[in-house]
Image (tube, rainbow, N blue to C red; front, side):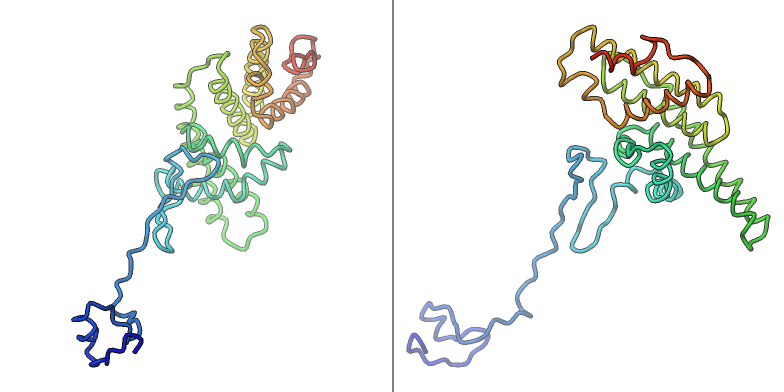
Length: 272
């Protein structure tokens, strides 16, 4: 009508418009004949570690094909225990240690270091075993059922813990390198926690003391070599240092060892 051309009502396009070289505007857009673009596929990368490909999840349309946490586990059993650690065990450990390191640095390291992943899975299995043992007294289920669950969780905890220890033995420690020191401290914290909850107090205290010694040497090295403030222990994860400050108090209390000036990494901090 706007071009003063009478429509011949041919579909999908008026032939008169086609011959005249016009785009036919006489019909509404038929959406059924319009091709639908394929769903786009994009990568979802957690903001905290955008350069870690192990944390990539594939998102197609409205469906997540995999999750970052599931991708780091070897099988479904590992994932179930790891997920239990994230959703339940972390809360207990945070209350116990009074620090948020478990939901932060520890989980981050699980993507990068297999020793950390195996250790937290072991802690989750041990947590489940503890709950199974406690529920025997109040649950209506049979004793045999709880006993079987207890044995299963304990066995899996020890299996994962053994894998973690095997990976830790492959680690190297450079007391001047912050990354290797961090890994060593986390390994000491994880083994201290596992042995403590497993009832091995002496082993737990020994691991805690070892971590305290490593951190003390690292801080002393930074002071002696006059490393700038932005590279010294102040940039070591604050929650990790806090965890060992509290562990040192516990170790001295149980071992009843007097605090000797210069014998503690806390002394190194106080002198600054």
